[in-house]
Image (cartoon, rainbow, N blue to C red; front, side, top):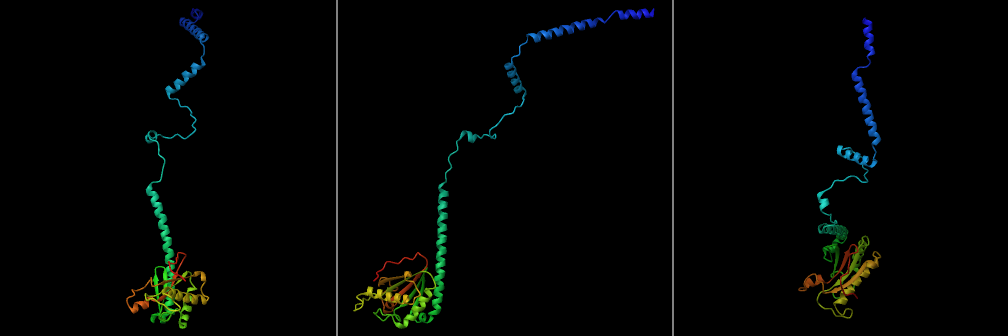
Length: 274
């Protein structure tokens, strides 16, 4: 009896809900097959929808750049840059610098020239000590020039252009020292305001020029100096040391000067030469 009942339960088949589920699955499968059969794929619309969705969801994409990204500036976008030009202050400063450099070079050259002439002055003061003490010779620095002043007393007789023989050794000593240094040498003759008139000198110009020439020839005769370094000038009574108001002053004005100038800046002053 119990065995008969067990056989009857199996003969009944699957439960009732399985029939309903199977019908539902069959209907869904048919529905999707119909959808697939009626659908048409538009590639262009698909790409456009896909791109819109990327932007909406913030999907990043690679962008090829030809230059480094740069920030923007309100000044750069609103105002155009002007062409840079040097200001007048900078130009003046450059000119001032060049001028100062030239002045320094000139000052350096002047200092070197002064040193040479100062050393010569010291040497002559030692060698011609006796003549200087007797006021036959005077040494004076005038800027870069060294002036060797030969007074009339001891070098020339009054009113004459004949050089005293006893004075020639003095000029030989001077020539030897001048031959050891560079520089231009100017020999100039001077007189007082008393006019001279004799067979050899018609006036003070002739007297001063012939005295200067006598000194120049004596210096060259020592073979210590080159002629291209020498200059000669005559001033008569136009450049007195002292006013021609006394016999002592006039004696000071009657002289021959040997001027030594260093460098190429030497320029002979206007004079009357014979």
